[in-house]
Length: 293
Ligand SMILES: [Fe+2]
Ligand SMILES: [Fe+2]
Image (cartoon, rainbow, N blue to C red; front, side):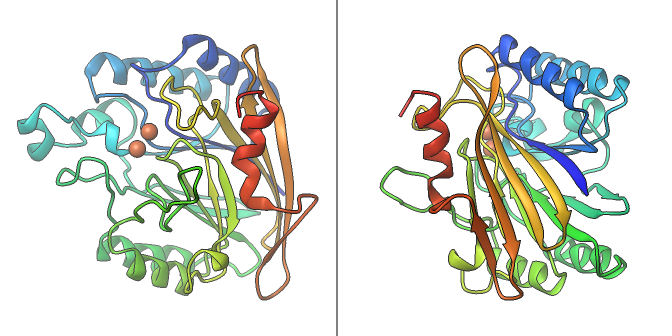
């Protein structure tokens, strides 16, 4: 069993310090086996924002917590055009991590993070074919019983982002990326970017999903909210490669509370949810419980 806290879209520079402190305290108390942070550490990739993000990460690491981190599109400078194209992730590498495609493995899980942030697009992401080859190669060496988890900032899959069910853009070259994830036997696909919480069986969202369960994290600490959905992060208990519990931990204005809780089991064909009748409403459930919907 692995206990993983999945946070995303921290956005130092547009963050609420009270919420950052509460998230830090929560993590230090619960002590996950791994903290996954799926990008957007800063609001505008400014040095002082990276310094704040770095200090926060160092505090978590000093507390003995392990982290797996990847950049997001906000970690690439937007207005500094020279830096944007000449050295888009130089500051990220200096202050956060040199490794843009980190890999973590323990006795229960194997986790690969892939950088999807690019200079050429303002907010859309992309996975290239070298990364797809890396995805196949990394997981090819993993024993079959372990849960294979892929982390990207931009979701591999089109995600419902509006109240009317309209879909987002999926990551660039997503059909090839999904094929690679399928061949690599990915069980879980974690992402952020849209500041919405969503957990849904990938097979219900795209035809060639490879059977991965897609788990979206909201923004953990940013003040920029979508549809007034409150800040949240996910607390994953990976029991086996075919059994996972997803808890959404939500900011209620005073502290982080457990909001919704879904068990997923893979029946050999697809992920099935238990305890919640209608998993697509997970994000709405969070907002309702926090009294904002
Ligand atoms: Fe973001
Ligand atoms: Fe983003």
